[in-house]
Amino acid sequence: MAVGEKKWEWEIQAKTSYLGPGFKELWSYRHLLVNQVRRHFILNYQQTVLGPLWVLFQPIITLITYVLVFNKLVGISTGGMPPVLFYFAGIVLWNFFSDSFTGTSTTFRENAEVFSKVYFPRLIMPFSVVTTHFLRFMIQLLFLFLGIAYYTVFQDFSPDLSLWVATFPLAVLTVGAMGMGLGLTFSVLTAKYRDMTNLVGLGIRLFMFVTPVIYPLSTRPDEYRWVVLLNPLTPLFELFRLAVLGEGTVTMLQLTYSMVFAVVILLGSLLIFNKQGDKLIDVV
Image (tube, rainbow, N blue to C red; front, side, top):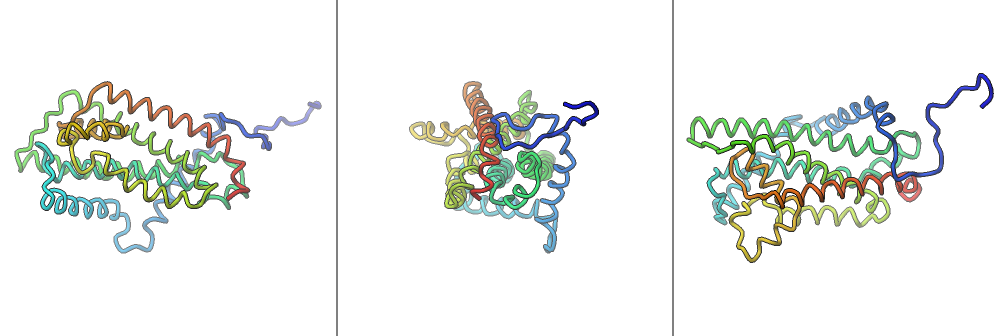
């Protein structure tokens, strides 16, 4: 380099890398991440009658439907937990996974024009989607805690939490990692094959029925329980209910299986996303 010549802080090349941008580069775009999260909230709730109240209105309507259909009509047992708390716990955690997965699965298709015009780490977009849904989850979780407080004071509900209450962040973070990991993988597929978007929508609806959202694992027949246990989300949902409601069926082996799956799918999807990111711009 000649004397007095400036050294570039960033250099954009045609080469792609499995490792992608480093933490330092991602951190330098933190303000873009914050702006994207704010943008998602504004786009979702502007020019609506209820505005941000949709964060609570949608899960409450779903909760009423589940209680009436699955508890009252079908008669699915919720064990020793009040049906309202049981279903609401499953709904808020499932919404976090489902929204994170579907939101990141269309990263390239939704942002093709932006990606083709300006450079920034592509991971900012899926990170902003997951962060937005995590904030919604936290609002709904607060509402769940208020429901638990009400049942504890007025309905004689006494959850046996013990030390399990400290594990609920582990369940939430692992579910978020799994949702983002699967979403990043499918974002590459939906960019290449448009009909994969329809498959994602159908698959996520069917996937819910092999996840203990509307039933506890303990009520499943032994001959079919293995099918539900193959789902890596099952131990996480059981752990989440055990942590916040004091009742759930989970072992360390099952939990280890879920965590290993989440780590493998997240790391693998990050490598694929980083390697394929710039190549897919022309395809989309």
